[in-house]
Length: 181
Image (cartoon, rainbow, N blue to C red; front, side, top):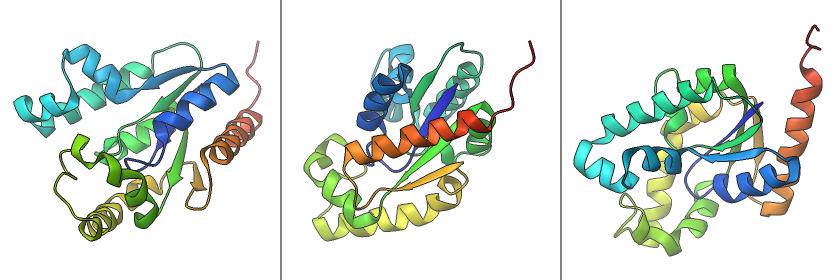
């Protein structure tokens, strides 16, 4: 089974994904790291040298490749991956999607210390950061909202979120019809 963790940057997709994978005995895939490994450089370098369209195409190709992978995996997606035409629908077809939903203020508090590592956030003041995230979230919410499960994470720690995500996976497995032998 594939379990896709989606949400805005800073929502904890990677940190929670690693904990969840360990707890469930699943493999872990970080889509940005997979793409970087295939490309031989960082996402930032890819954006600078090849452009965003090139990166987004690599994301789509990776999603299609994941569909053929055997085994159980927690997949931490890039924040924009679900927002490209057909991607969230494909993720929903391939497995379970869980949206780690956080508001702009919470995300800003989690991201402000690492602004220099994220080119689109570099140079933003604290107030500008909250505004930027709020505007960006508004554009992405229609895609994120198509996830099978939505976890409200504003007032929750990573351990609680991990527990809730594990319950979502358990619920999803119970909903699947028994496979014929």
